[in-house]
Length: 164
Image (cartoon, rainbow, N blue to C red):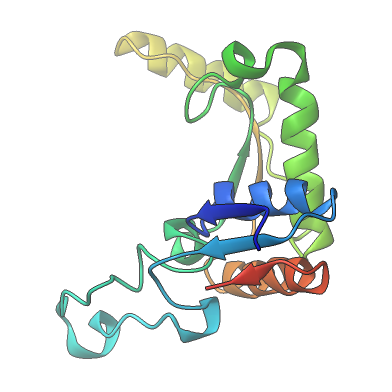
């Protein structure tokens, strides 16, 4: 008997499993793609997409972000409006996610624009009708992200979470 089934092992699925694992529930995470170590895109070698089904870049443990540049945007308005969903807890949730990635091996350094750069970029953005939001970012890198995701998964497995 399974207490919880999580469909999708991208960041949301991994963090849902992490949260549920605190309750000692029997958790199964299902993803149509492969484990992080088995996700290989053949396009690099062949020079064109082979249209793998499922796609090794988009599907599997870690989701599409596992093979991105590994950039964490540490602000509640990037990718939506977390303050609308979580209210006063938005920053706490961002810090919790950031702490988890640090726990799994993300670099300690954060990237933050200087005040001078922020002002210049705000003016440039306003000039074309956009808004620049100065934010902190943690760059895990495209080479480092798969190993960080692998550590995340191993930690969940040590807590009894199963993956299929």
